[in-house]
Length: 302
Image 1 (cartoon, one colour):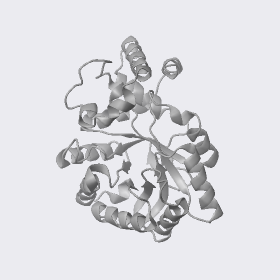
Image 2 (image 1 turned 180 degrees about the horizontal axis):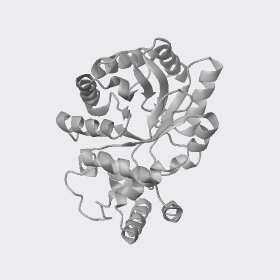
Image 3 (image 1 turned 120 degrees about the vertical axis):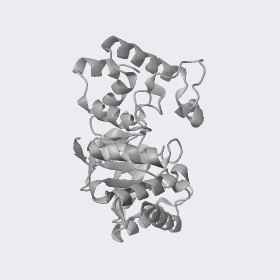
């Protein structure tokens, strides 16, 4: 598995990473252990989680796995803080995450979303404290718009604070918003990009049809909020275009969609939400890449 630089942090991450959102929500601990075992066996070194995933249970599962497998030194470990990003909460959240993960520090500590209610300088100063205290090697942000990241970087520069070394946005064939401003900003400022939802929460696997019955037990059934995001005419058009290309070349839709993201320039890693060890293998297979003609055809699905 290719290992890539994460911004200017000095961290290296696998081209495909494991996202822990499914742990404790869609899969139990035994299955999560099997997924993590397969990931480590196949060379995936990035494990990303958050305090918000299953109310901290995702972190707890990963912590027990790290302890039982003695795998801490083999992985790049990332987590996130949610809620009101006051200095007090950022510090308390980090300590709670470290306890659940059973570690003294993480490699990447991220804010899960932009908080317009708390002064950004307060949040960034608290994150800087965590870096200086050795609680995290680097800090990052998730779900930030380009202007929000640019503002944060300016404040960090002016005040001499540890800067964001990574950002984590959604990116897939049906949602390419980061191409307009966020990706160019990250390239200019050497910010690592860890993207998530490469299959659009399963939308790009071909399970769904516009106006059709929703399959029980799928992500869009378990998390209905995804329907409002992806069940639009424009995004169904992209998905059906992917279905036609997949049928023409004889390859699974999921494989093509994932390979398209993994091969995009400027990305440090692409997180997959594996629910089985087989999903890990599918993620590895996607790193094989696409021919120029096939990539061009997928690029045209807008």
